[in-house]
Length: 212
Ligand code: 0O2
Image 1 (cartoon, rainbow, N blue to C red):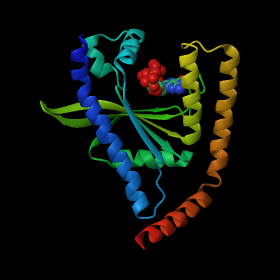
Image 2 (cartoon, rainbow, N blue to C red):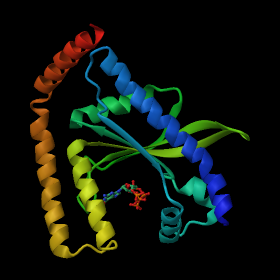
Image 3 (cartoon, rainbow, N blue to C red):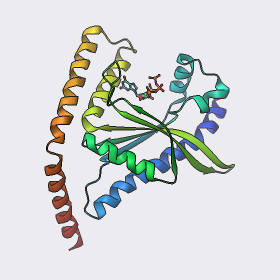
């Protein structure tokens, strides 16, 4: 497929990512404006690059005509939470929305990947309005804690450095680190209520200050 055709094909996905990032950031703002703790801490989004799409098509033997159906993560959103418990709250938010329809879930938190990767993935259908009319596309939402994101970011850089072939001694260390992150997330959960109270009163105070 020609470069121009790829760009045209990706345009609705760019719109979807822009809209979804804006909507999730607005959720954070809504919580904070009323002085409530937001289960979402950070939002990021990206459209998969053409070269990564081509790599994945080759790896998964996907025909170009099936790419939009088979590649569920052309549009990708990442929602970062402070605590593991927040992930369920975020799922409830997504489930309750009328503009996002959940297609499937992948729970790599209860069952981490062999690499040690932990995250909760949801594939959604999302409709965008383009100059050609409405288009329903798929998007992948990755929901994970700050700690899980730290691990995934480092591991992703190592995958890049070693071109997907990380040496065994490094893989072993990553598995140990992944377990340590699981322990850390559970330890942090035990102080969640305290932290939420502290953040709530801090935000209420800063809202008061900014009103003066
Ligand atoms: P990128 O560069 O993030 O776009 P798979 O067959 O495992 O490649 P599949 O079946 O599409 O992927 O779905 P899955 O397993 O839910 O993984 C989709 C995405 O999750 C990946 O996209 C990564 O973003 C992330 N992910 C999955 N496994 C790992 C892992 O072991 N380490 C890290 N750091 N991230 C992971 P892409 O297209 O592989 O990569």
